Image (cartoon, rainbow, N blue to C red; front, side, top):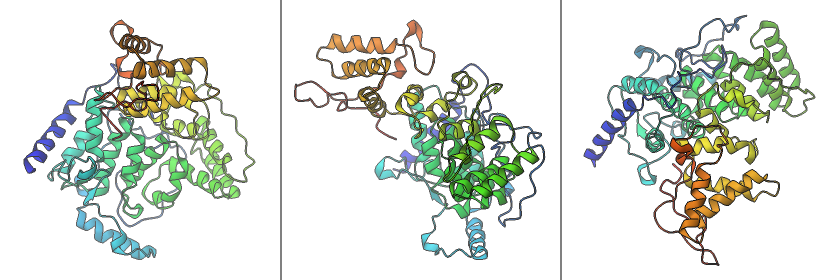
Length: 454
């Protein structure tokens, strides 16, 4: 067993280096607005009052590769506390803030993850124990999404496995690095779940920054509210300042929300589309009479702030803006809860191609989309082709349906391979023939799938 984990550790380490291959030939593009969401160096554990927001938050340059092929600069090793020091400092912090939380109810940072070995995890020693900073730098340097959907699936499983924190890096920062890579792979849901495995009182400045990105990527601005006000003690980012207005509105405190928006406008904390999207989010709160019309004229690129708030408030994002970001953003779109199935269709194509969606999940999506009473003819055609491909009576009928599906126009505008064929977009069948329906035909939903869930 130990030999297996050692080999696995070597495989993952080598694989992460090998994954530094761009999916597209173009260079990485930042998808953050200027001044929004750039992770800050970790601050001391004892909260201090946040300094006043600067009048011009766009002045400091953003780190290259935000949510693309690189993460922000890693904090110095001296700022990554050892696990025992983190525990003692956090205990003192809890006592100072009056929390009534027994030690037995708090989750350890020694071992964090979602998948245990008995449900498909790769084991507690998946990343080994030594030199956590070097492993974190490898993750930060890994270009994502990766070219192979199967490599992406294996890497995702490793990142979400419940594994021991290696030495040399704080447990919260180690979780932040894993979640940061998951986000760049298109795995917004898994990144968020991994971050939520850490108690809020143990967040570092870096984990707060990545938490903000995961919440925007999953189109859930309400998720920022439990992290306030402590996040403001660790970060001066304008996104956290604007989050105060959004959370006040969600608490039906429209007067406070309006006052914060007025202050943000006066100080120039957010401008243009970024300010108006925050207004839109405030307007979605209870007892709000604020109505905001979003105009995308003059917006040159998509950002996580713009994607997250627009998607959460069901504001359509112009198709041309998706060309300014990596395909991982389309994968985020595939699971956005506020969007209709038709709106999530382009994202589902990308998510299936990248391996974010398993074959089973993709088939279920197409089946549901085709069954909608108001489904347009194009959506119905796609669902019919897949049903035929998986459950047709004759082999030539199934093969013909697969060929037609592969050569269809791609909803996400992605490029096909040689001959105009997009093999990666077809949900995979698995081993076995599946069950049969009452007429003796194999059903689409019952066909096996080589990759299920995580």
